Image (cartoon, rainbow, N blue to C red; front, side):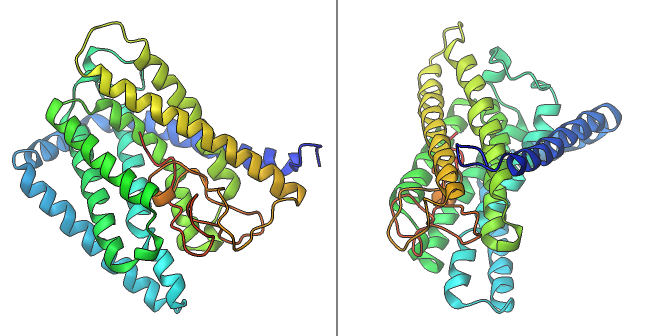
Length: 331
């Protein structure tokens, strides 16, 4: 082991696997664009264009669809034979995990298409929207509202004031603003950052699927490195636009939170590796970078190498908090 407390070989091994999988995904996406995306693109544009004709109806469809998804997930948890307490914790991650995975995949597709084309530099066209980017804002808003509503009913103990109520309310308002000002393309690019949230959620639903190091690595690549670039290009955009103030505020705030939480996670992993940081029943401020409490807000939940699920939120005990904070996109 290194003096820093990390097992270098394990870090290298996990990092290599994660980066390789990420590169393969991007290569496949590029090949898909070249070979078959044109036909699919035209079809999807038509579908989403029709959906946008009645946005109120779209919101109803999204809420109903996500509710049905939650019901199936909750029933599955019940049939799995886990304890009642464990069922509650798993329910809290059903919508978040699906939402993160869906947003990430849609973002991959959108970044492959015009007008983004994997060029993330802010320019006039990216200050606008497409039918797909507008749809994803509706989707994100619907899941944020539904997560709070279902949370109050089915997993209230897992809700955290800051990472659930404040975070979801803030994103609800931001989504309304983006829809009103027709600027959602930068948001759909940021949905690439949902990958670590999905990994975190999957680990909460099934401990056997928990991957601490891939989560941290993807968080660093997407929530810190990519977000830093996006933040830079937004802050240096030279063309005057009345919407830039709100956009810059959101990017600046989330950049600070992402880097702060990531550094906290790195420090925690070092202590865990050295054996000086062991989970206790007290409310540890260590949270995982991507969870609904961490789920959709930035904070690194206590992911231990030992495999035990730590505190779900930075302000609650390891047994009661929803630490769904995952850099989860506070954009």
